[in-house]
Amino acid sequence: MNPKIPLLFVGCCALSVQNQANEPMKVNRPNVIFIMSDQHNIHALGCYGNSEISTPNMDRIAKQGVRFQNAFCQTGQCVPSRYSIWTGRYARSTGTYGNGNGQNPNENTVADLFGKAGYKTGTIGKHHMFMNAENHNHGFDVVLNPMGNAKPEHPLPYDEVSPGRSEVGESPLPNEKHTAGLVAAASIKFIDENKDKPFVLWCSFQGPHTPITPSTPWSRQYDLKKLTLPPNHLAVDTLMPGGSGLIRKSGKYTDDFYHKQTLAFYYGLVSQIDYNIGLILDELDKLGLAENTIIVYTADHGEMMSQHKAWTKGMTGYDATIQVPLLIKYKDKFNGGKTINDLACSIDLLPTLLDLSGLEIPKNIEGKSLVPLMTGNANWREYAFSEIGSSTQTSVITVRGKTEKYVLFRRAGKVEYEQLFDLKTDPWETTNQASNSKYANDLVKMKSALKKWEVQTEVSVPVKATGKLVDE
View 1 (cartoon, one colour):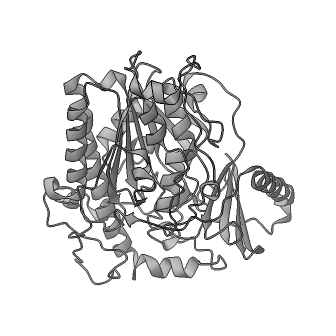
View 2 (tube, helix red, strand yellow):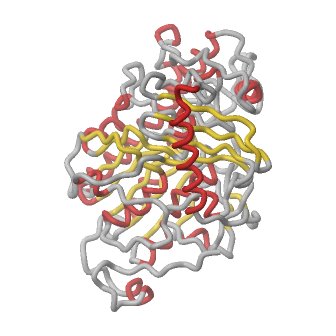
View 3 (spheres, one colour):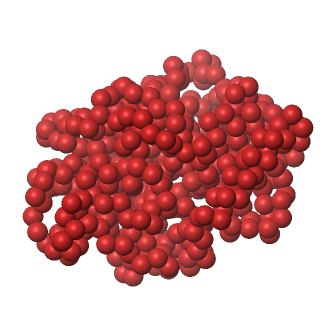
């Protein structure tokens, strides 16, 4: 376990953390609104080049801020990814390897660090964390799940989709009663109540994770006959461990019609979330808070979205599930409309927010502030690392470079399978080059990078789950 590291204001080393929290803010610190969706494929946004989907408000953040073209989560699973974002540390370091693990109460979270600096902190929407008295709700002042634990949005308009896994269809609920509308309304209420003090808001939407059930009019916004399936739709690696199980888990898709029908509803849910993000942005404008508010939009992980004939996610290293949209806007700090191609990681978000807010970055944070990339030039990382599994010995680990990728499937410490993709010629990951002698040197190089990362990265035992799981 890691003892919590005190947070100090930059240049104010003589003050203790406790005194800082009790004294009034002496500078005009920015607000932070962290908007997250669940399971959002990077290709389902207009600002990332998809002309078939409408996301004007996400595009608005990108136009006014910075868009990261190559951002990757550190695990393609909800809970460990979210906790890595909260702590700026890898899942193997926090001990939250999977959705069934608890969270180490000795880890500093975004709420702990900003709360000690005098911020009002709130998490609204999908938490997917174990909350109990021991960890004091991970430091948040306000923990609100306006959606409740019930899931009323499960219509099955056609019987080709498997019940209980991939519910797809039109929600009978209007936007104001839909999960997307409920999260937006509660977030706006939090902003209104705390407009006169610095605040950090974690606004977490349920979708476009299953159930893929948008309300009208978004459920009818897209004509499936006009939609295009991804170019790797038919590229299935039959040798990949878990591949056939992932396809079975996705649903009973007998032909491309059902893939396109699901895609139409998926796009509809993304657009409904986008509409509700617009309500939040409009409220900031109305209150005069937009210029002094850092806004982040990202997802905890991606969605297969019919790539490799699959939906949802699984034990893979495909970009469909580990690459995430990442948009950051802060008008006072940097100009908008910038695209950055350097590799960014989800664990970079916490140190970035601390840096932008003028707060000290604890030494045990494993991510890097993205501020140097957003404001100028910087020497940056060569690889991003992502893993998913039950332990460091049974997992799928991805080494993602800008032009190449290595994926190791390991079970009980033994190599089970390997993938190597040349992203320059094969950006949609259709051909595994791991056994191609032409790429032997690349394979050696990336294996060496993985070994170095594993040696340098802190490892903790899995954390036992205790307390109450707020939602699923």
